[in-house]
Amino acid sequence: MDKSKAKQATIYFDENIHKALRLRAAGTDRSISDIVNEAVCNMLAEDQKNLMAFEAQDYEPVINYEDLLNGLKSEGKI
Image (cartoon, rainbow, N blue to C red; front, side):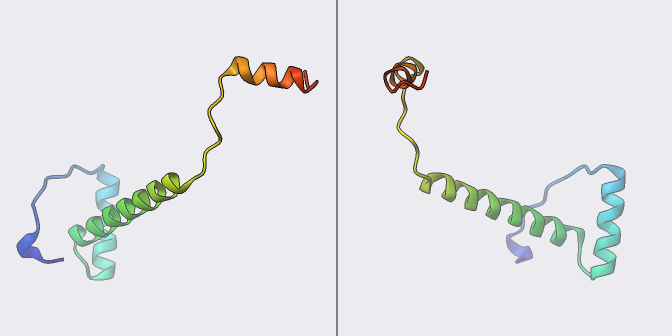
């Protein structure tokens, strides 16, 4: 991450989550900021992937409930 373009924010973590982040940071020789930035980027990428899949999805035509029931009745299904 280019620190000259980074924005500062205050984030409040649950005490145990903060402890886990500190341990993870120390164990991987990374900063908490780097770990959180990576997690947020992964979350945003997953959201973007889900949105693309949602937009590409083919939807069934919309039919109102009454028409659905009438169709089922005319087909002898109800």
